[in-house]
Image (cartoon, rainbow, N blue to C red):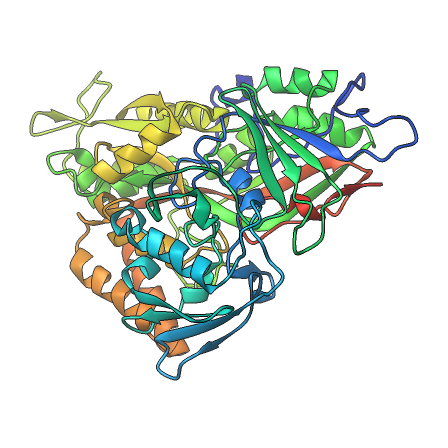
Length: 539
């Protein structure tokens, strides 16, 4: 069957996961901010949204910004878990006790010492707000945090939990803020300041305008060469592109909430000029449509309807026309480079006739001249929610709406702020919504743990046949100490959600960086949420 481009080709095409851009055309102040002969030491980037609350133990703040200020005990790298604020660690034979030996040369940005007492204060603060952190399984396993001596701290778990170190490496919540910033010894009711141990400190914040981060002079890892970073709030699209042209900003990137900042054509134009370098990561995550299987008396509760939607979406068109090949078509929830995800699953190719057959057999029929299918008097209608700050999501939503119309499904598309989308996901007030997997460093354990979390995907999965059995397998895989058992359990869990089609995959997203050729030290972390600015420097 010929794959139609529909109206996508007429839409403004926007970039994918991460685009770092320098000013083009006439070079203005951002690109030439240093005096002639001096090395440039500051960066200005555009963000579609304000950095918001920088409390590292809550979830409204910008993760790229928080990643500059706060650090964790360990770091997740391409070579596995490596030391960060902990120089080394020991794990008890039963896997329930982790003993961390801390660096002795670390201070918080307000001068307070980073020590075992500070670690305990932070971990206790996170655990005091455990409901907020239910999505991260480690929060349900921690029994206590004990100070052994000034630079030794012990973490006691209720049971073996193999992803412990991985979850301790995440951007939040198990990172460290100065105890002086805590309110009544905690962080759940807010904080008095934002002092971490990281390479940059927040020095100024004008809400919905900009935020300034300056290099931490006493950073234990050495003062960064980029001495000042400004996050400037700008609308995505043409406004950001014009700011680049005028030199008002140095670069942009898609933030952790999925807002696209610049279109692919502009990115390619800059790359083709010969003045910029283009760097792409391996697949980091999967863009998906989460379907509310628990919504009874709604068509989305039927597996046949979910499968029909899956077959009716042409991922090649989305990849080629919307993302110009910068994201690749996805047929499974996780790309095969994710740990444990190289599992053989049936494919559901783009096939309109199969989609129509599934609906016919499920009793959703369409009368002569009718536009919408019906079943026992109910029309085949549903709502799809997307992030209003993401132009790619809007374009995809419009394309999918048109594709489903061709098989007799009426899809209403609704754009809302990302915080509203996240709230709908947790409350179950949705039929379908755009989302993405947690990402390379977090998966599969974090996304799969979220299947059973009321703050995440419980409504997506709870209407599945065998949901309780799957939740039991999730509990088992997280405490398993046997590698082969984990592989088997993960394969079962992935097969179950795949068979039920509750997560409809769209594309695999790789981070793309387009930067000036004189900017060195550009690298990717094992997450789409952060950039290691401290490694960057201008020639």
